[in-house]
Length: 87
Image (cartoon, rainbow, N blue to C red):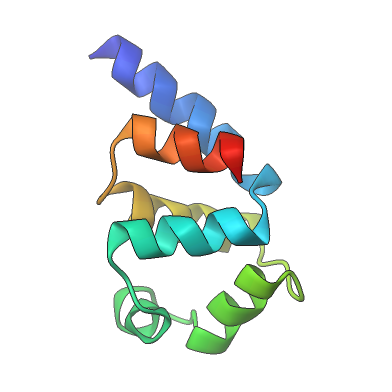
Protein backbone atom coordinates (compact mmCIF):
# COMPACT_ATOMS: atom_id res chain seq x y z
CA UNK A 1 0.00 0.00 0.00
CA UNK A 2 2.88 2.41 0.49
CA UNK A 3 3.37 2.51 -3.27
CA UNK A 4 -0.28 3.46 -3.81
CA UNK A 5 -0.06 6.17 -1.16
CA UNK A 6 3.14 7.51 -2.72
CA UNK A 7 1.42 7.62 -6.11
CA UNK A 8 -1.55 9.48 -4.67
CA UNK A 9 0.69 11.94 -2.86
CA UNK A 10 2.66 12.74 -6.00
CA UNK A 11 -0.60 13.13 -7.95
CA UNK A 12 -2.01 15.47 -5.33
CA UNK A 13 1.19 17.51 -5.41
CA UNK A 14 0.49 18.21 -9.10
CA UNK A 15 -3.01 19.61 -8.45
CA UNK A 16 -1.80 23.17 -9.04
CA UNK A 17 -0.57 22.18 -12.49
CA UNK A 18 -3.76 20.55 -13.80
CA UNK A 19 -5.08 22.13 -16.97
CA UNK A 20 -8.69 23.27 -17.31
CA UNK A 21 -9.34 20.31 -19.61
CA UNK A 22 -7.84 17.90 -17.07
CA UNK A 23 -10.17 19.29 -14.39
CA UNK A 24 -13.15 18.72 -16.68
CA UNK A 25 -12.06 15.20 -17.57
CA UNK A 26 -11.46 14.29 -13.93
CA UNK A 27 -14.95 15.48 -13.04
CA UNK A 28 -16.59 13.55 -15.86
CA UNK A 29 -14.53 10.41 -15.20
CA UNK A 30 -15.52 10.58 -11.53
CA UNK A 31 -19.17 10.74 -12.57
CA UNK A 32 -20.03 14.25 -11.42
CA UNK A 33 -22.05 16.93 -13.13
CA UNK A 34 -21.03 20.49 -12.33
CA UNK A 35 -24.22 21.14 -10.36
CA UNK A 36 -23.59 18.08 -8.16
CA UNK A 37 -20.39 19.66 -6.84
CA UNK A 38 -22.51 22.24 -4.98
CA UNK A 39 -24.16 19.42 -3.03
CA UNK A 40 -20.88 17.69 -2.27
CA UNK A 41 -18.61 20.58 -1.25
CA UNK A 42 -19.62 23.49 0.96
CA UNK A 43 -19.11 26.97 -0.51
CA UNK A 44 -18.12 25.69 -3.94
CA UNK A 45 -20.61 26.66 -6.60
CA UNK A 46 -21.23 25.27 -10.06
CA UNK A 47 -20.01 28.59 -11.46
CA UNK A 48 -16.63 28.14 -9.74
CA UNK A 49 -16.24 24.69 -11.30
CA UNK A 50 -17.26 26.04 -14.70
CA UNK A 51 -14.72 28.87 -14.53
CA UNK A 52 -11.98 26.48 -13.36
CA UNK A 53 -12.73 24.17 -16.29
CA UNK A 54 -12.75 27.09 -18.72
CA UNK A 55 -9.49 28.54 -17.41
CA UNK A 56 -11.10 31.83 -16.38
CA UNK A 57 -10.76 31.39 -12.62
CA UNK A 58 -8.22 29.80 -10.33
CA UNK A 59 -9.56 28.37 -7.10
CA UNK A 60 -7.54 28.60 -3.92
CA UNK A 61 -5.12 25.76 -3.30
CA UNK A 62 -7.32 24.35 -0.52
CA UNK A 63 -10.43 24.38 -2.73
CA UNK A 64 -8.57 22.74 -5.63
CA UNK A 65 -7.31 20.08 -3.23
CA UNK A 66 -10.82 19.49 -1.84
CA UNK A 67 -12.26 19.22 -5.35
CA UNK A 68 -9.45 16.93 -6.45
CA UNK A 69 -9.98 14.69 -3.41
CA UNK A 70 -13.68 14.42 -4.25
CA UNK A 71 -12.86 13.26 -7.77
CA UNK A 72 -9.98 11.03 -6.68
CA UNK A 73 -12.26 9.10 -4.33
CA UNK A 74 -14.04 7.79 -7.45
CA UNK A 75 -10.94 7.12 -9.58
CA UNK A 76 -7.84 4.99 -9.31
CA UNK A 77 -4.31 6.39 -9.41
CA UNK A 78 -3.74 5.25 -13.01
CA UNK A 79 -6.82 7.09 -14.24
CA UNK A 80 -5.77 10.27 -12.45
CA UNK A 81 -2.20 10.05 -13.69
CA UNK A 82 -3.32 9.41 -17.27
CA UNK A 83 -5.62 12.44 -17.31
CA UNK A 84 -3.09 14.69 -15.57
CA UNK A 85 -0.20 13.64 -17.83
CA UNK A 86 -2.06 13.69 -21.15
CA UNK A 87 -4.40 16.63 -20.78
